Length: 566
Image 1 (cartoon, rainbow, N blue to C red):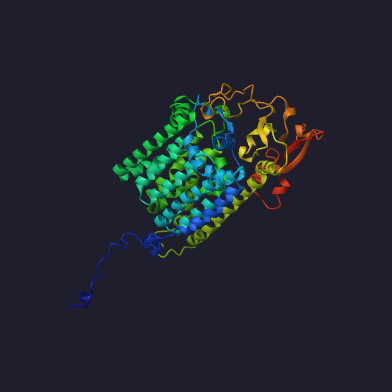
Image 2 (tube, helix red, strand yellow):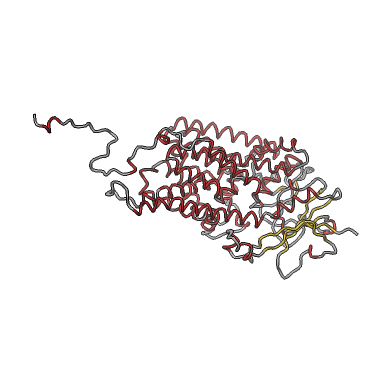
């Protein structure tokens, strides 16, 4: 027999590379830890996110007066029977969900019992609860990424979820858009873990309990969850929707004093009724691109490039990661078409921005690999690998610079109002606020000896919040001074400024005097620097640059005054 005939040919295995296709790194078996689905595990992401969310809860500023007057103030009324009401909470319009507030009262009520009259601690207890929700939902997302795509991508995503300014601030903001952001993280994680029924249930919770308009951001995961296990996913979605809508309607009935649905009212007002959000300001089509870069810097740029690298990385990421990330483009496109734009409207897609940027960074070497280079020893591929930690470090440094600038530049209102709790004053004091009404941090910072917070006329001509009126019915009231046209009410200002015991003002370097400038009438009892946005260069006010931030920026003084007594 010929020697060649004695040679036994090895049977080809299914894992062998095809003779017509070169062997590449993508064909290598996964490491055992990834193959076994262990990945990062649960403890490390939970602890890392927990530490950063704790920092956020304790140091976050309030970025939007809507957070105060539409959520913190109604919650304060539910707990203490005092607080400001906006026209959206008038039973005539009933646009805001009391079920969302009730969900947070679950924490706020025990905290109010525990801390008695220390309302500031109650405020932070609710913030810690918000941070915990963010920790739990983001941990699921990170672990799912680790199991599905490996430790490297998950680690990049974890770092960005922890440290990018957008996620740092949005994670502990008391807003429905933040709640929808939690739901996006959890639904995306469950989808990647192949739990479509759970994913679609979470999406329903994010829409009904959180922000109804976020339904667009949940569409891709919802549609694909239904396509995978239609019957189970459909039943889960239906049951969750019916239960939540029923709870919402019943809660609204007891709050507004009539049968109504705040979810439906909000949709009708903004969609069928056309809405009039333009009354509160309009922005150009590039607003969210600028805003996205401010809050995520190069992370945002890389996230937008995901579709560009997708054809190269399709083998790794199609279809699941594309489905998870696609809401970025859907949401940005839709929201950019709306005339009224606000930073918080982008919150739902913040975690997805981190995931998309992580996928792009992880794919850097794939952009330069050649199918003819079997051993992948190309210098440019090696350089691309080195660029991974470089790009991540640049993102995290810029994020820290942004976070530092915002916290140290704009935290004065929260800190100045805290002084009231430690100041001795007569009962029945009146705190007056003029043009700084929109930076009022909520009634949680107003001690009991202050019986009223009143607005004084400093030129604002829109409609301001009024205290909830228990005489007219409290949450069920439909006060005549409210309207949906943002028209000022003749009753919203305190006419006799001599009734003011305390005064809050921001004093800037401007060619006019403020009320607090009259030192014969007002004595400053607290003063902190506040970044002057108008006079500070955009680069230096947006990002902290060592040695230059303090030098290049211009600061005013945020002051709390007390009336001088004879």
